[in-house]
Image (cartoon, rainbow over all chains, first blue to last red; front, side, top):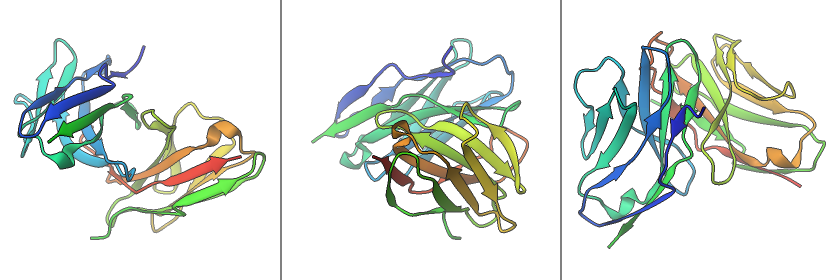
Length: 114
Length: 115
């Protein structure tokens, strides 16, 4: 089974609107971390936000927030007030305590429309 | 604080050749991970080095090997290159904390083309 599933290959959002990018994960490890990265066309992966499996509150970082639903094993990224510079690939990733690797999803391409 | 750097930026090799990619980790980080990202895909974990020893490996054949040096910089070596090895190779450094919160900082990547 896939560790990380991102079911939206591409998304469009109007500038200044909010958008939600979906991510579901699969793990039997009770302790894990969930990450979102942004990858512009230049290729570099930029860390956006982190959610720990034991965190009681949903993570927020500026315009980014994470809608963490542990029972559903979902960790959706919400970008508020979209900007043209938000156009990029977005990857959800997970790291389990028992292992050393990050598992990445296949990504969602976000296009912000002026 | 210097970020993660990788060299070279681009590389073209012929099938069967060998290649070495280099990565300098961020200051203060003791762990380096390497990823392969094929076009249109998410990064796939190759392996991780911690204090100069391999500390985890993904589903890659032995012709993918690596090194980490005392200054925590790292090399990725790929022998007997195949066409499917064409990809963006990303290096990420982190500080091993023993928790999942170990955030990774990525370099700009090396784009390898095998012809």
